[in-house]
Length: 270
Ligand SMILES: C[S@@+](CC[C@H](N)C(=O)[O-])C[C@H]1O[C@@H](n2cnc3c(N)ncnc32)[C@H](O)[C@@H]1O
Image 1: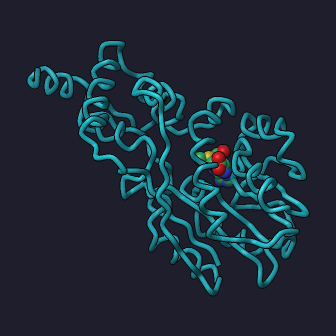
Image 2: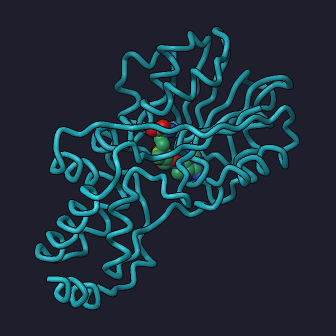
């Protein structure tokens, strides 16, 4: 049995350098990452404890998962959501409980707002997707008034904190290369601190958040992770047989994983 797994691994060495993580389905995103973002966002907002009535910009708002939480919890006077993905924005616009949020297409590296337009900016699970994170943080600092809040939370990508980390480990063991976000190094706590300080922000605080999600069964865990852009992209390249081998390897790994092991998120703010 073991020998067979090794053979499969050798056969599976394919170059996946061209694969990219794309956000083209807001509903699938909701079941996979939107749920994670809300679970994390709740803890993040407890920590951040912003006062009500603020003008917010949600940079990389995606399908509005965190935007909706912000609207429900923080009684903002305004929220602008910015994202480059039409599919994500379309889903976000269909969330009645995200009001007063409005959503528009845009890029974190060139926010379409004058300086000092907002009291608070946030990037929820976004900084590692921004090709130039320095520019992204500088843009948040530019559009937030002096004394405002510039904040983010990000998966601890290099520390094994991604929700699909267990699947990625088994993919690598099979010689596969699951795509990572383009700026994944930015997710380290020290990198985030440096980015925030480098943008001239003071009173920078960071924290690590541990978040857990319960699945009814391994099959539910698997099916939901297959909705994730990076996992789906790799599995789509596999034969049905190899996809089953991967699934069985992940199942065995999950059985060995101690209870309480969970994804970790890093959050800097000023
Ligand atoms: C993991 S999702 C996070 C979405 C949402 N903030 C949430 O908490 O669920 C990452 C989002 O970043 C967006 N994104 C990618 N590159 C971006 C960029 N350069 N500027 C702004 N957003 C970007 C993607 O379109 C995607 O919706």
